[in-house]
Structure formats: C-alpha cells, structure tokens
Length: 342
Image (cartoon, rainbow, N blue to C red; front, top):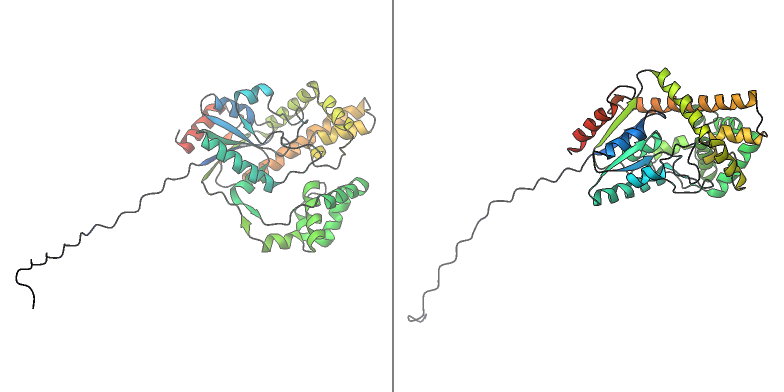
C-alpha cells in the first residue's frame, strides 16, 4: 500500500511549445561586372577612370596580356597604371607557353575571390570573348592539352600552313571545320589535338560532355560598341601607328632574338606580332613591303574587332553603351553603380 505520509507527486510540467522558426533569407551574391568591347573601344581608359571613383581591381579578360615580354603590341597597362590600380591576369606565362579558356576561368575565379576578400570590386575588362563566355556559361569537359602533340601540329602548320590543316580537319570533323576560319590556328590545333588523342571529333565531344563551372553569381555585361564602325577603324589605324612609334618593331625583334619562339606559337599569332614577325623573317624590306606590312596589321586588327563585335551581339543580356559617345565614363560609372549597389 502507498505510504500516506509520502508527498504527492508534482503534476507533470507543461510542455513549452515554440513557433517554428522562419527560414532566414540568404544574402544575395554580389553581381559580377564585365566591361567588354572590341579593340580600340577605350575599355582600359574607362576602367582606369572608374577606379578613381570606385574601389576597383581590374581582372584582365585578354588572351594576349598573359604573355611576358609582349607589352607594346598588346597595349598592356603601363607600370604606373598597374601601381595606381591593381591588375590581375597579366604577365602570367612566357610566350613559349600555352594558355587556355579553362585556365583563365580558374585564374579569374581565384582573382575574384581575393579581390572580394579585400573588400574591393572586381571589374573584368577585355575583349577575349571566348574567355568571358567561359567564365559565365562554363566549359565542356574536354581532354587536357598534350604539349608534345601540340608541338607536332605546330611543326606541321609551319611546313604546310594552317589552311592545309583546316582542310584535313574538314575531312575528319566537318562540323567543327565549318565554323572555323582556315587561319584560326588555335582552334584548328585544338580540334586536331582532340581527334588524335581520343579518336572522337570535337563536335561529338561538345554534344556529349557536360558543361562545368557556370557562374554562381549574377553577371552584368557592359558592352562598349561603336555607333559608327568607320570611326572605330580610324582609331585602330591610329593605335597601330602609335604602337610602331613606341617601339613595336624592336619588341618583335627582341622576341625573335630569344631563339625559343616561332611563328606558329599562339603568342606569335597575336594580331600585329604575326605581321611584324613575317616582315622581320623576310629581311625587313622597306618601301612597299613595309607599307603592306602596316596595312596588313591594321586590317588584321579590324578583322579582330569585327569578330569581337559578333561575339558581343550574341550576348542578349548585355547593356550596350556607345563607345564613341560623349560622357562615356559617366555612363559606364552609372551602369556599374546600378549593378553593384555601390
């Protein structure tokens, strides 16, 4: 029997009920801003002017600026400009080496993370549209480059010419060849390399392989495009003559004197370098040959600008600003501030 003197047990404590917690809104990632445009559109000057108003660090989107010793013909930012404003992805490799869109994405992501960790704004500036697209949309998982095979293909190109290798590619991978120009050395080389490494055409690889590395943050693309193509062409001609006056020929002579470079390398196929290398190789003739070399350099630069504009016009979400209009810096400044909320 229960002990009558024992105290009565306390009533059970009432359970405390809590309202379910509301999920906390996640902070939105800061948009990534890209300032893209054709050569001679004034991208670099605008970026430097923006850096006087905003805490910007510049990330180069230019496949030529990665090479050391190639300063004049690439319009590389001066030492003073690089002291005033931090620049990234410049002077990364020797002209003997290869650089790829995949490496650009990796290098750019590392630079962007470092800039944001310092509390600054990354501004991607350049005209290598393939790199810009890779950073935003990701890349197909393709086989890694094979340096020995690349060298053999370059040797063949020196002996036969890139149009002959393009014709070979047309027989083996007609879909890829159809979208490449006969002198698009870098892409012809890559397509032949993939064929020899795997036995599978690049066009099939692009259909089967997944896209990796899409940008996680929203991307705002500001495109500097000319309202009058003829004015851009005049700028290109003046720019090329200014490079010659600044010592472009001596720069190419110095590159040739190294002894470890040749005309088939991607670095020496850059616009301007290719034409001056050929002129030097011919014995540096004067008269009409020199005039023709200058004309060829200017024409090649105009063709580059045309290709860059074609790429830009395939970016439907870009914000277009006339690079020839008055108040260009202010217009870009306003667009950057709207994008970043600064």
